[in-house]
Every structure is written in C-alpha cells, then in structure tokens.
Image (cartoon, one colour):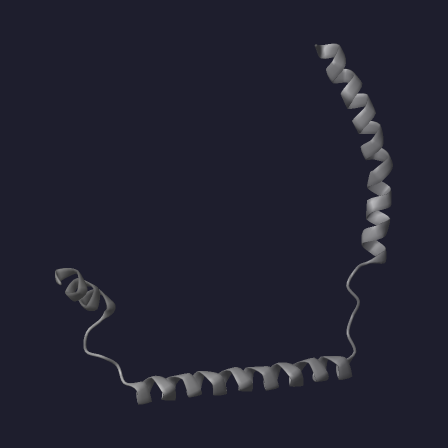
Length: 85
C-alpha cells in the first residue's frame, strides 16, 4: 500500500514541480496594469451617470408607493382574514 503512495508522490510531484514555474510566468504576464488618468475619469463619469439613474428610479418607486397608498393591514392580517373564511 505504501509503495503505491510513493509512486503517486513521484508522478504528481514531478508534474507539479514542472507546472509551478509556468503558472508563475503566466501570472506575471497577465497581471493588472495601471490605468491612465483619462480612462479613470471616463469610468468615474459612467459610474456617476449610472448612480444618478438608480437614484431617480428609487425616487420614482417611492412616489409610486405614496400614490398607491399603504393599506393599514399587513400581509399576515390579510392572510389571517382569508383563512377565517
């Protein structure tokens, strides 16, 4: 049993020792690069526009909820009333 374990260690250890430097080289090649200031400004402007749109949608939802009006009873009370029938 121990003999087979050593065979697996030799096989997979050799493969791992061969693959480790290749993985490190690929990580270095595909590392994140620094962004330029104009690219960052464009990204920030796009995010500001998206956030403004989301805030407007939230305000519209709030207005729609106020127009619709909240009922005095909650969901549980309605369910309880239906069940009593």
